[in-house]
Length: 178
Image 1: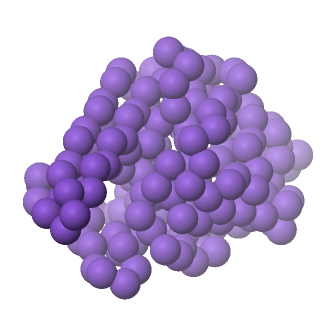
Image 2: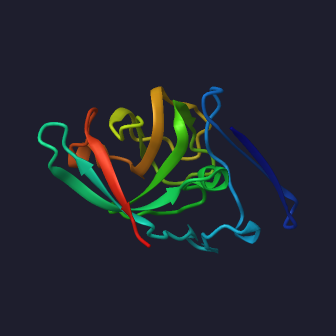
């Protein structure tokens, strides 16, 4: 999967390029503008606004108890996965974004045009945590790989995993809101 987009803005002809890819070793990030049909709205001050699409539960590997519940946005297609949390200026500790890929393979994300430090949680096809990239550096183009096959990727605020004791082997479940 590979998405590349180029936007030219009239104000000084600012050039913007973003990419999205996975097992090719290149990072996921990028964007889709609100003018191309995205369901996310933007404002001048805060960037894209959160849109609750599902409720996600973190389940303990020990006893399957719910460790934490958050509201999430879903990124289920190339355009949504490319947009991700780019251009967001803030996000509540009770919010996140779940990226859903067609099948499990090694994933790699980056933080280009992402202003919020994140914990990036990689999950296999059974929705079990297989790796975590904690306290990511905002606006960085460094590749943040999964190191293992992942079909789901969850982005939450940096420090979330430490604060709520989310760890390898824990699972998630989620329920879409209709």
